[in-house]
Amino acid sequence: MVNEQLLRNVIKRIEREAADDGWNQDVWGHLDLKADQASPGDAGLERKEFTNHFGTPFSAYTLSDMTSVSCGTSFCLAGHTILEAGESLIFSSDEDDAEVYSHLCLTQDGEIKHIQTRAAELLGVPEFANIFEPGYRGPEGLKAFKSVVERETGVKLD
Image: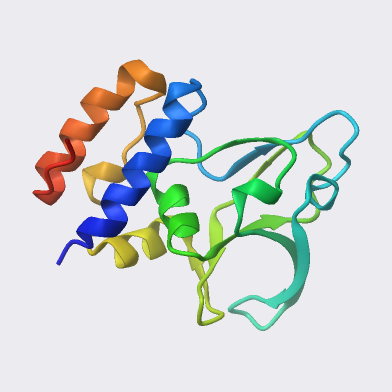
């Protein structure tokens, strides 16, 4: 069953980001660090220790609140779903680039999951639903994207 309230809240987040031409459904968990930021920690993300599914420990940064971040960001529907649900995105700490990406998240129960897998669970939709497909961006793509979301979920958004 689709979590209609969460879906509507996520769409509102995307609408705010799209109004500034920042939303891009093609980009998952993206941080664009400023010139004086050498790591996600410099942008305000919290560093934590984790253990992967092979039992190997690793260090990474987590993001759970956009207001604490001092860098450019871009998230697709799945990434916005994670943050709207109060969970965290995990960013690798071994990036030397000005752009850092995430494909993992930390659930409220402390599990590490793939962003799309967890977003599908939270929204109550299939993991490979068309609402996670790329190809939409900015204000001009939002209307078409919302039509796909409505068709796929049965939830009227406007």
